[in-house]
Image: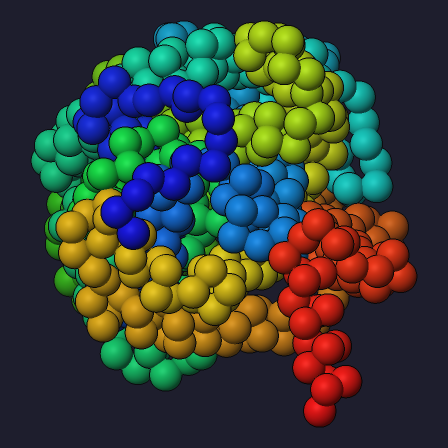
Length: 620
C-alpha cells in the first residue's frame, strides 16, 4: 500500500504545524464535561475506585475508537461522509448521522457558552450580583423566592434563566440571553471565518488557556481551609461500590463521550494532515491528555468544594454555639468551633433536657461533602457560592468563567467542523458559494433554532438535548464505524494503510480491540443503557417556588408530547444509517436487473466472457 490514496481531486487545506493539529484535537476532546462531570462521578462512585472502570474503558474502548477515526480520516483525506461512502456506499448514512448529531449538539452546547458569557459579564461587578438577594416589588424586604432558597440559586434560576415551573410553560424570550447567545455564535463565526486557518490560530489560546487557569486555581485552592477534606473525600476508594453495574456503565459512557468520538469532527481534523504522519502517537497523546486533564481538574475543583463544605460546617457550628451560649449564659469565646464537641458532650450529660429542647442543627462535615453536584449545578451554583467566600472573589469568578469559555469554544470548533465538512461533501452547497457565507448560514440557522433555549423553559430543553442527543445515537454511530472498518473495509487493508502512514503495522492489541473487544463493549453499553432507560419513565427536576418542599426541585414526568420529541431526538439522527443502506441495496439490485434485461455489451470483456461460457456449455 505504498501508493497515496487521494479520492478527491481538490487540494485539501493543511495544518500549519503538528502542534496546531494536536491542540485542536485536544481542545475538541477536553470540554466543560471534564470539569463538571468526571469529578462528580468520582465523588458518587467511591472516589479512587472509580478510576479502575474508567481506565479499563479508556484502554479498551476510548483509545481504539479514537485511533481508528484519526487513522481513517488521515488516510482517505475526507470528512465523515466522504470517508464512509468511500469505504462502502452502504455506510454513507453513518456520516450523515454524525453530521446531524454534531448540529444538534452545537445548538444546545453554545447555549451553555451563552450562560458562561452572562456570568462572565456579571463577574466584573462589586459585589458580585449573586452575593445578595434583591428587594421585593414593594421595596420593603428581600424577594421571598430568594429568601427561601439562596442568593446564588436565585441569580441562576430567576435572574439568568427566569425559569418557568414546568417544561410545558414556554415563557418568553429572555432578551439578555438572546444577546449572549448571539455573541457566542458571532465568536464562533469569527474563529471559523477562514476555515482551519483562523480556527488553527484560535486554538493556541482556547486549548492552552484552561490549563493556565487550572494551575492558578490549583495553587490557590490547595491553600484554602478545608481543601484537604475535599481531596480526601474525592480520592478515598470505596471498593464495594465496584460491584454495582451502574458504575461500569457510567465509566464507559463518560470516557466515550469525553473523547468526542463519533461526532465526525476528529475525522475532519485528521483529514487535513499529511498522509505520512504517526496517527497512533497522536491518538495516544490526545486520549491520555484528555483523561489526565479530568484528573488534574478534579483536584482544584474538589479542593474548593472541600473549602465550601468546611465553611458551611463551621457556620453550622457557630449557629449552634450562639444558641448554646445564649441559653446557658456561657461567656463569649469560651465555646469555639475547636472545642464545640467537648462542650456539647458536657452539656448533654449535665443538662440533657435543655439540650433536647433547643433547636440545634445537626452539623456533620460528611453530609456537607455529600452534597454532590454536576453540570450546571456545579458551575453556576456550587462553584459560584464557593467563590463568594474567597478573598478577591471577582478575580476568581472572572478566571473561572474565562476558563469555561475557552473549554467550550474549543469543543464547539469540532462540532461546527463536523457540520461544515459533511455539508460540502454532500454537494448540497454550490461550489461558487464562499466558505465564509456557508459558515455564516450555518451559524445563523443554529442561532435561530437555538432561541428555544433562551425561553423560560430553555434550561429544561438543554437538559433534554444533553441527555438524549449525545447518548444512543453516538453509541450506534461508533459501533457502525468499528464494524465498517474492521469487516467491510477490511482489517488487512486498514493495517496496510497504517503501515503506509506510520511505518509500522498495528499490533495485536489494536486489532483485537477493533475486531472484537471494542464493538462488544459498545454493544453491551448500548443494551445496558437502553434497558435502564426503558425501565423508568423519564423525569426532570423543575424549579417551582410554589412546591411544598421548595427550594428542593420538584421531580416531574415529561409530558407525552415531550416524550415524543425525546424519541425523535434519539431516532432521527441515526435514521439515515438504515435508510441510506436500504437505498443503495435497492439501487444496486435495480442496476443488476437492468444489466440482465439489456443483455451483454459486445464491446466489453464481460460480454466476451459470458459468450465464451455459453459456447463451452453448448459444446459439453
